[in-house]
Length: 346
Image (cartoon, rainbow, N blue to C red):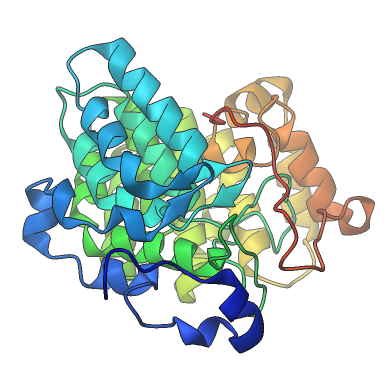
């Protein structure tokens, strides 16, 4: 398909998204067909950026942002990352060009000579998830993607479900990179890597084994809590039935640290439909302190509920009183997307 052909939103209104499904204008198909040598060689010129778009128009300027992120100058890399983030993940919208950045952002993060490695990984994790902000419910906290029927479009009319799925597939294709970064010396990189792999669409057992292995040796408290939630999120998406038993064993063990017991309790609540038992409520009463709130406020899954520091409180309120708060909904899939400010949340 010619590079000059573009997604025709008006034709989609008439004929539906099936018109482009599986074609060269389906970013999922482009990610699936991106050769390993293009990804490993950082051959940006081989990627059809112009075919897809971001908040400000054509994606043709995205390669420049990625190249500048590799700069030895920290200010140059910072400006490039900010511009990239605001373009491809604008006000909560996952734009169609965003998944094409994933293989290259992973490789930038793997290069210890680059700047803002963790921030680039967080961008990967965000474009690989639905617009989850403010949803700390049992069904929402660990939910990665919307159902296919929940159509939300980006500014050019591309379905965001395709973009999210393509980003998740890109993570799966290169899962060896964030798996290796689980052992990085930089704790923020380790944390971001766990957040990334938890959204992968494939290689789930390999990723789960790596997360469990890191959990066994991780010494940073907030990262231990995050690893528990990463294990639970991956299990929820891929229906790993043993995860409910693992999380229950963790929260019910009085020898475990408070952050592990609390994270495991949240994970268990998201993995099962059972009412919260009295012993779990007792664990929460015992572990939830001001100090734990400060620690958990830095964990990505809690920051996604409230990045002003009240995420733990809001999460518990929504898990135990789901009627008290309902995330905003949009009945019109063609409406302008709603979201938050342009600044990256991390």
